[in-house]
Amino acid sequence: MSTTDFRQHLRPGEPTFWIALIGVAVALSPANTKVAGAAWLFICVAGAVVAFQSRKVRVDLSDGVAAASRAWLVCCAVSAMLATALALYRPHGPDSLHAEYRLLAAAAAVHVLVRKRPWSPVWRSLMLPAVAMACVTALLQVAVTPDRLFLPSNALPWAVSVAFLLCLLLPRLFSAPDSTNRRWWGVAAVAGLLAVLMSQSRGAYGVLLLPLWLAGSAWRQTHLQARLGRLATAGVAAMLLLAASAWHPADPLRLRLAVTEVSNAQAQGDYNTSMGARVYLWSLAWHGFTESPLVGIGGQERLKRIHEAGLDLPDAQRSQLAVVRKVGHVHNQYLHAAMDGGLVGLAATLAVLAGLAAGAFRLRRIDRVASQQMAGLLFMHATASLTNVNMAHNYYAVMLALAVSLVLLGARRTPGDPAAAGLPDPAAVR
Image (cartoon, rainbow, N blue to C red; front, side, top):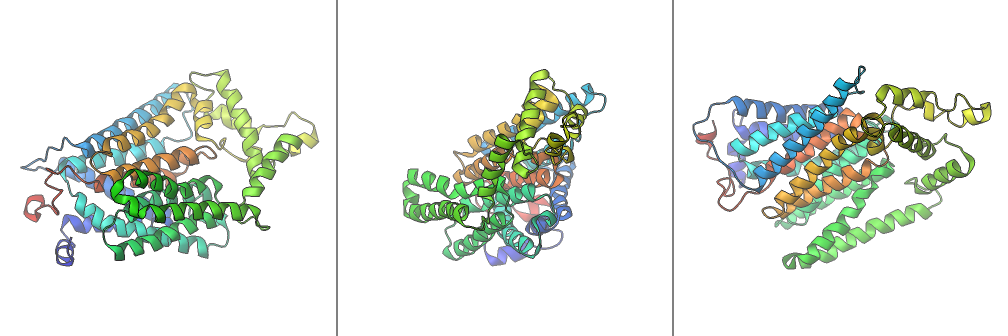
């Protein structure tokens, strides 16, 4: 899109003005949870408005993007229905259904926008700078925050949310034809990676594997072999950074600390540490699941068992579980779902992963970059869920919904798609 077209369409009253407004909220989302929520809300409202607007010409898009958005919507709906069924089954219900319904609301809005407003070039041109700026915002935020405990949200969900932004930026970085933009995207990507590392959130470090995965993908694409060296260098540098930090006396990324805490928990029964508490909670969750594999023991019983952990033991052993008794979940999304809702609850959790996988699969033939973005989101959500119940945090659910929405709204269309050539006709969209 040329500068003239950009200015022409970026006016109040134009659809692109409101897309740019969402972009501003996305750019500032790492600094404030309410701003991230506003971006999510804008997308939901846009979908609702478009759904009820009368339109003479409806674009019928039977392409991979529409199929991907449909698959994502269906899986979010399945997750929400299963979670709701469990809530109705138990008198006290679950802790919250906010995550499932936030994902579902955004998925429904995006499906409407994809089918009725095929403006993917506009979304790409406005959202890629917003995502890049969000990575810079994240670095500034963590740099001025005196302690990781004072980040806008819990440190691990916050860091994984920044990793979601990197999942959108990194694939575009190495596919951008303009070298000037690529340098800017590269600076933003480095800022995002530094923000994740400075947050010291070990569950988000998986994002450092993305450059290696992209390098392997580029190796299979002959037209991208020239960039293979850059990708491989970035990936190897990330791995060397992790190795160097593990051997550094200060242990800046807390990697040696994690190993020590797990060892002490297993050998001495000391669970009053971050990883030590996780070791105990994972065992507690597994036993709860085995007691009631189908529908679990429920959230109330889970809280009761956590808060009463070790109270029937001698004083010395009871004191070793003081940290465990202060938490509210078992720090593993899968075990948490299985403990609370059994196989039904676990299916609700896995449905979200299935939606991400289906989206990546549907997009692979029409937009390789969008497929990589969705696959990156799948990887980060799946791995980060191993050490925390991230979906218990509003900010995380909003950022995951936003990231998937931006992938689907910005994915390239099939060659015959009217949106593939550029901006929609302003006269046709008012």
